[in-house]
Image (cartoon, rainbow, N blue to C red; front, top):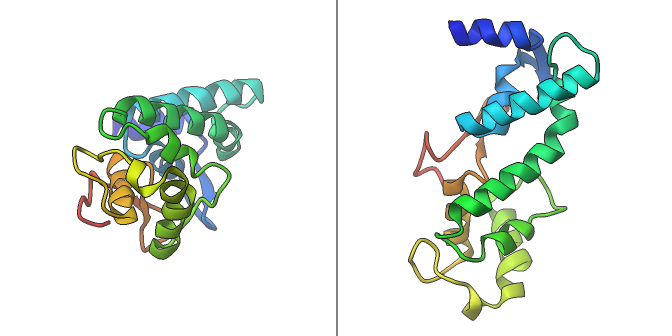
Length: 169
């Protein structure tokens, strides 16, 4: 309850997300990928943007205006946090730069293969979580596990994450 009061005090009541009116918590939750630190970071950044825009409350426009910078911060965090699990994490994440934001399973496997595996060379791919590289699916599971990718829920608004459904990928 207290959290909802904070949201109402700081954020505009709602926003349009995937052609529906939803609580501001939905885009915050999606962008932060269930991570409190990222939720705090996106809230702070969008608060600064709201002040710059001379708005009383943070709205979806403020969040979207800082989304690119926030995304870069998220990728930097993922690299620092998971480089011990996969030494090529920077190269792997960079292979998604300037590409689609949504993939079906088959197109994700192709993207991993063409954007990373074939460029690096199959024999040059380091171990992932201590296991020798086998397939693009192994990389996809790793990307899901670390929170780089998630699966859109059936409602088209929310997302499934590794913390909630570790066997989904």
